[in-house]
Length: 221
Image 1 (tube, rainbow, N blue to C red):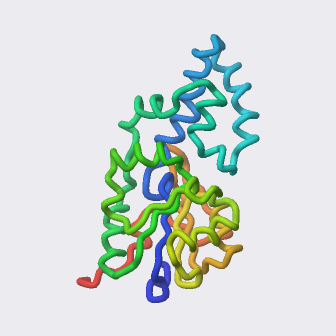
Image 2: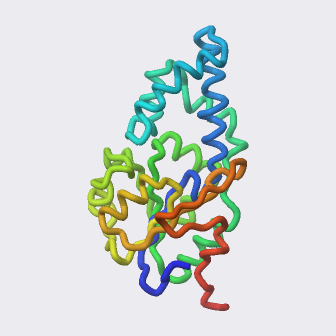
Image 3: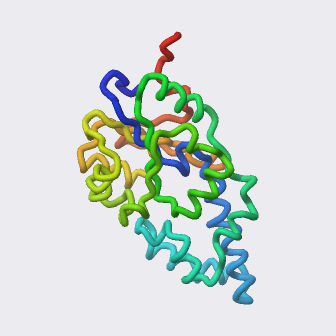
């Protein structure tokens, strides 16, 4: 359980933390390879063999999260493809109650996401998460991914926060490491980002399966 008495700001990841990562997993692992194969006249296995090294090259960089980059790189309209599977966009169980309790206790709730603005806009349109947050920051606004320790320094110029009284909740271990290296004191790993995939635990960070495990006590409890 986080030490809520010493936390003023909660920095929240979106995909895999507040939202089910299954949407993104399906898009990148199933739909995109299928459409890439179709557009190039390839069989699916060949298309995946071509895509895998491209994905690995850019993983963890801002390009990896940039839909404009992938549109150019692959010759596909990624947002148009994502719109075909918006029925898979889902808020994780307990996430909204978690946000509501934080705000009732006066905690600042700030979304910090690597998602590209076009992907972010699509997800906000379908979930209205923005109604439950104090501020939303995309890594593309800063020009740095969360995996870069400089992201957290640059973030302070967009939303003033104090590292030792802030909590980051994220499923990305690389982002959690960079936040730790910067000096953010409170860190939590979401260990089941994708509802359709096995949970994964971490020896490096405190972790949780469901939001009710870390839910701050309600003032009325």
